[in-house]
Length: 286
Image 1 (tube, helix red, strand yellow):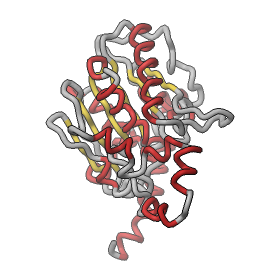
Image 2 (tube, rainbow, N blue to C red):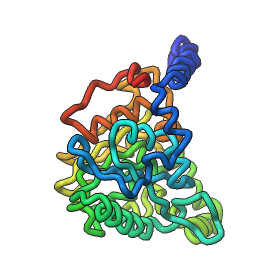
Image 3 (cartoon, one colour):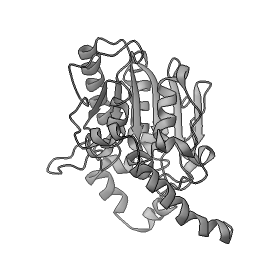
């Protein structure tokens, strides 16, 4: 990176942070009350938004903290929004997404059925952050989820696993480390690039027919590395680099899901492509 671009990065951060502070009042008020319209089991989808949206948190996240910003953002726009907890380990509160990912996909299967039964909708849309953008692929490919899902939108998903900037390649040099991770936190072991889970997940192709896929990645991702490993291949796939939409956006792996209104705007475009509007740096004000 050129020196002058390094100097501009702090300015860009301040600019986008200030913009977030003056975001629409309705969304800000909703964020202070997660139960207001979010996980409202009496919600019925409208003609404008006929499919409920299921939010799938990332590793170490949960159904509340991962979506304190994005869930109200969607509710404010008229969507029925739901979020689940998955991948819990015994004796570990709050921090989820650590159990075996195939079992977590089974939890998603049960939750989607509950949402469809409650709303009367035939299909849902899934939006996931990190592991939450990758794990639903197992549900779609191996648990019969494809007929029940219209779209899967991943915010920095680790679709092909991660090297954690090469750190995972050092595990063989520490005897017992791989076994410890696999036994204590199998959900982490499953996400290592080249793991048996990742190999099975992507065998035979990245996608299934009938589902529309969107991947929104950030080049500053320090968790999913290399960041382009998030991308999927298939005729029904759209891969997006966040910085191609807004060069000033410096969101890394966590921020793209928790606070980034530019990524959220692009996600909404995928939820309702018929009414999509161009995503730019100014989308932070919308």
